[in-house]
Length: 390
Image 1 (cartoon, helix red, strand yellow):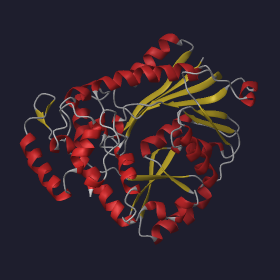
Image 2: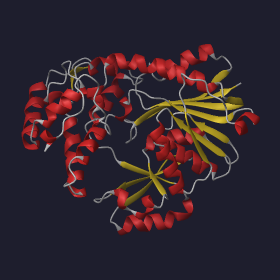
Image 3: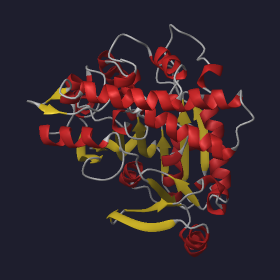
Image 4: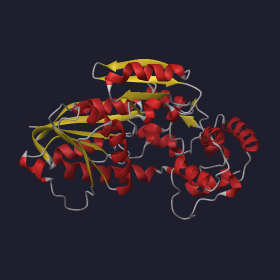
């Protein structure tokens, strides 16, 4: 199967594994939904141990790793994984002799020590990264909750309500069929959103009548959560440097019935004029900067991170994050709240960026900061810091 598709360039970084796989499937229309689902699960399971299986501790790029994986049949690679994991046992040393044969490149033994975790939590975090994460949903409209539960129950899904805090109610679901096929998803009544991401959205604490800016909106998952908080009263501005992402946000907002979502391209390197209605109000009530990052907190969901991330990337991301945070903060109204976040476990990207920001912006003070998720909670891991302008 994998010999038929080769990633586009050798020298440049490969795309994320899910995009690489999506491009492959576009060249192979003969695969049905069940086939694609099975291959996707198998491929990502293999990536979880690829560092052992293909010796990714060398200077290989992610592109080369994908090509190496493409040259193995699943059965052969599975066998190779088992053999190499056994061979690696006792070689991957972390934290004073703890042996974790995790399929991680060797430099991760140093990277993980830069995290915000204690040594005990570092070990627990690493022990969980080769397990599949659960699927969480968030309800856009509580009035459809009965219909949603009936929809999931009718298709033999378990539907469990999770209450990590009083400000965030999530639902954990399990089932055999793809969740995208359910009417509740198609109607926009619910969104697929990890629990850690929902906690960040809850920290924004938007209320009807507010004007809110999601500066690095991406695909718009947290944007939809903020729009739900506003209840179509007030305005949410969602921006991203990638224009194609904004079209996805527009489609999601329309499907969910949110008519108060505006979007625009935002580049922190370029000048930016406030929309007139925001300028007349003195700025945004809330600004969320969910900054581009190493994605190290999503290792379970995105196992290819371990093969694409280099030690130098963390410092590069931290510089970019600080620049975006400093630029975005200029558009906050007095007494407004600035929420900084990453899906990273590294202190340099989290507390380190906040500390540098506060040195140059003494009119801000921290209201709350938290690293939420795995290993304490069965979810991704996200850092967020809520800062209020004095």
